Image (tube, rainbow, N blue to C red):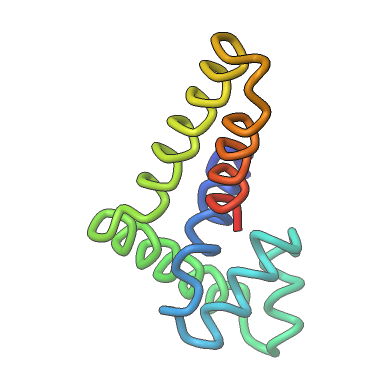
Length: 113
């Protein structure tokens, strides 16, 4: 599986996990976060590989649909980029202002929580 796709789905899962059913959560976590194979997930739940595949396909599409409507991940990425730009600007133009640097770091830390 493509690393970029896995990374994106793990991020979407982090944002939208509370909106999923327990089974969707379990399958996505085992397959994408824990890197189990379809067969291993199927064995864990005593279902067919096809059942796992179908559930994962529906669940990942659901995550993408949530993101298309709510934009939580995209907005997070924009805020992260803006915070990093601000930190760089402060470091370059105000290197002696420890208070300003601390405030910028505080914003980045809040965003990561």
